[in-house]
Amino acid sequence: MSGAQADFSKQQFAGSHILSVSQFDRAAIEKVFQVADKMLPYAKREKRTEVLNGAILGNLFFEPSTRTRVSFGTAFNLLGGYVRETTGMSNSALAKGESLYDTARVLSGYSDIIAMRHPDAGSVAEFAEGSRIPVINGGDGANEHPTQALLDLYTIEKEQKSQDSGIDGLHIAMIGDLKYGRTVHSLSRLLSLYKGLKFTLISPEELSMPSYICDLIEDRGHELHISNQLEGNVSADICYQTRIQEERFPSQDEANKYRGKFRLNQQIYTKHFQSKTVIMHPLPRDSRAEANELDNDLNLNPNLAIFRQTDNGVLVRMALFALTLGVEDKIEDFDRPVHWFSTKGQ
Ligand code: CP
Image (cartoon, rainbow, N blue to C red; front, side, top):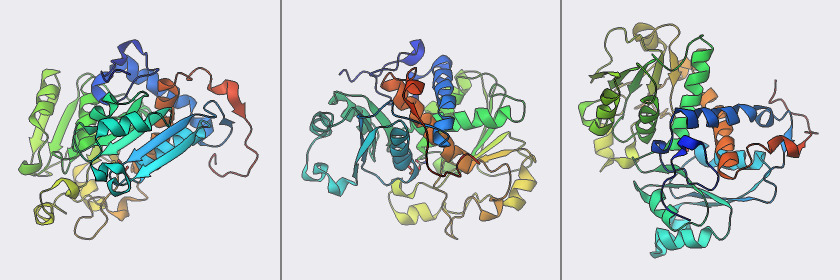
């Protein structure tokens, strides 16, 4: 299989790697979202499908993860497929010096599709060079997290729709560690495909958004406001909070300098945002007292969308599996009833 990244402008996903948001245009994004919408009755357990019965996902996570790893596995199971997992570098022959290329040659013989996370930027693309089956990037260092960006965008579209609005013209505030936070890199690049957005980027100067992304935002005609403090009334439609990515800092002492700098709680939210501003975070949020970037006192705020994001992640990952394995039009042909009691649809 070619390691080249397909571009999905013709919506030909089958057999392709998903390594970067740069593969997507607006039509491709819409295609993913249409398929994701069709997945809701399966995720809510109103019915199930065996469209991928017999297919195997290799779920390779060489860096810690809760929701990306488990939701990839859940998404594949919900389509009727089987999941084999490898977690942690020390449990893999990578720890014995095996190359990513050899690992990919071997593991692509054991499954039909691979989802992978690795701490090094560019590692998933390097792995894909050796793979004979599609590889989906579940996060490569501080570089990209394309499936998170797609689920974030899917959530933004749904939240905006519920307010009779869309993504064009949106004002988004991104807060926190914008240097090492790969989710904001990928999401900004996807959002830049839309029209007339305003980006307010709030971070310590040392943790600011990489200049190539700021340039892209401005080159595509969007308004860009950069600040190192939360000031005045931000009046954003979306407030996208992030965690200090301590695992990417040279030392814990360095990370400690920034922890807790941009906390968001109900009082700060009321002071700086509109009453309708949607609060997002890719999670995990750091709930330790010294950080607490998204306080528990927001948990009952109806605009807190963080758990809608995580639920949407299953739908979007189901859609990506269906598209890359070419079964997006066959899902309902393999429907089965759910015969156990489920509260998911309530
Ligand atoms: N958002 C995200 O990537 O979470 P995990 O690290 O738990 O996968």
